[in-house]
Image: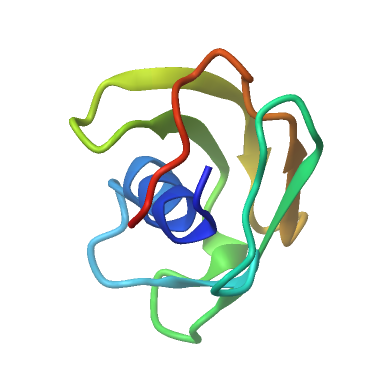
Length: 99
């Protein structure tokens, strides 16, 4: 699965509720990828704009495809308490993306 697509989709699902704040994805890096059935780590940073990560509780995270179809529900994460998420993408989720 393309890291670029993964990052975009993770952001869309995890941050849909954030109007002004932004979480900067620092991992996976451009050009890297997450593969189905293998552990994947996503790391993020606060941008310093309200709402701060310290003001945000648990975020429900999911992996969606390019058609916004839910592929995999991922355990909620408290973004103020941790700045990384480890999960294993479902190997049956579909083909890798070229985006």
